[in-house]
Length: 194
Image 1 (cartoon, rainbow, N blue to C red):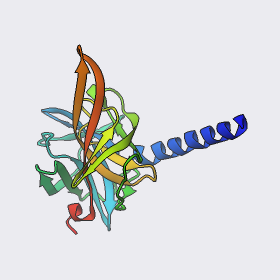
Image 2: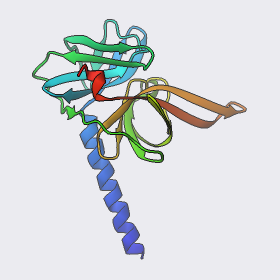
Image 3: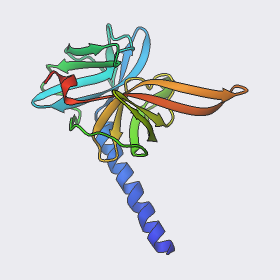
Image 4: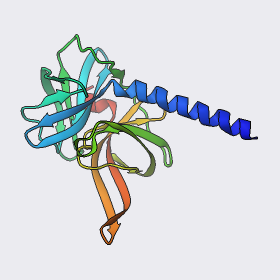
C-alpha cells in the first residue's frame, strides 16, 4: 500500500509541475502608476489577448515577465467594471512567450484550481485552491491571495483559463488571518468579442 501512495504522490507532483510549466509562460505582471497587478496572455481564434482585472489602473502600463520589462501594442476589447474583466487584443504577431489557447471550461464545486500571482510584488508563486462557491459570473475560491494578485488568470487542473482574480475577502481574529476567500470573475467566449 505505501508504494501505491508514493506513486500517486509522484504522479501528482509531476502533473502540477507540468501545469506550472504550461501556465507560467502566459503570466505577466501589469505595472502601472497605481501599482502592480497580475495578467496573462491567451490566444483565441487567430488573435492574441492580454487578460487582467478592470479595477486595476491600466493607463500607461508596462509588462514584466519576471526577467524583462516590455511594452505591447494593446487595443481594448472589453473593459467591464461590473464583471471586473479587462481584455486587450495585441497586434504583436511575434510574442516570444508561450501563449495558451483559450478553451472554454466551467468549473464545479471542490474542483482544484491554480494560478500564478505576485503577492505584494514578490516573485511569482503558484497557488492551489478549490472552488468553494459558484454564482452567475464568478467563483469563490478557498485559496490564498493578497495585494498584487488581482488580474491573475485562474486555471483548471486541465490547464484551461476559467477566470481572473477580482477580489479577496479576509476574516481574522485579533488581527491574525483566519480565512482568505478569493473572488474570481469567470471567462467565456463572449468576453473575446465573438
